[in-house]
Image 1 (spheres, rainbow, N blue to C red):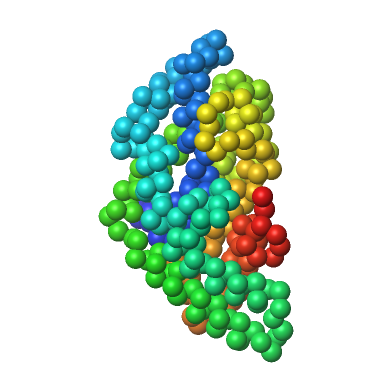
Image 2 (cartoon, one colour; image 1 turned 180 degrees about the vertical axis):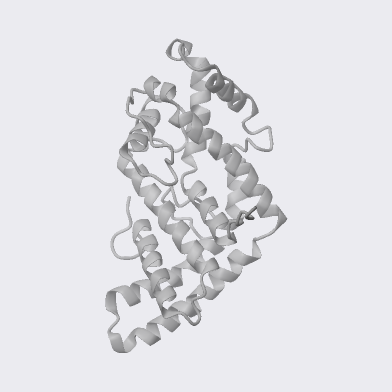
Length: 267
């Protein structure tokens, strides 16, 4: 029997970054679990499995290890990624945020200004800029990060299932089927529409209103960050110009989606 290949550290950390960017997903699922009790007339036809899931989330959120609330998730993700890239913040001064800025600048310099005679110099600039961020990310690997991954992955998966349940979508006036690989691997408009509807209808959501175009942008940030983190940690760029150039493309796209390079920062 073939041995199943274990995911690389770059993949694991990249997916964690995606979940942190899209951290509104578990928050909204929890808001729905509260609404499940607050407006029972809207949930008459809810399947028993989903009803049990909503009840468990409502009662254990912030109290059980695999149900970390928003404050606990911030304490788990914060030491690695700082504040979430899903929320534009002037306080992004974590090691993760500051270490990637020279990389974005180097990628922009290569993509926007480089002439063939200067390619070698730009590539070496990017290779040098990778080192601090790579070292920081490699240093967080270990038992603590593994527990964070397990806990946050469980909650996010639970929240995904709630949001993709057709019964939940109907409550909020969305009748289209949401793709099974949404939101991490699909940016379909159906899921973004649901996010918009939920944040417009439910009170006391800390993230506030999330229009569908904003959520799609968050998904793009998450995707480009995932690709870049994987490239930084899992790709040999020291002696492979093709691999380095591919990483440069990913970094430039990531920084552009964040609004840090290539144009004005999104509001």
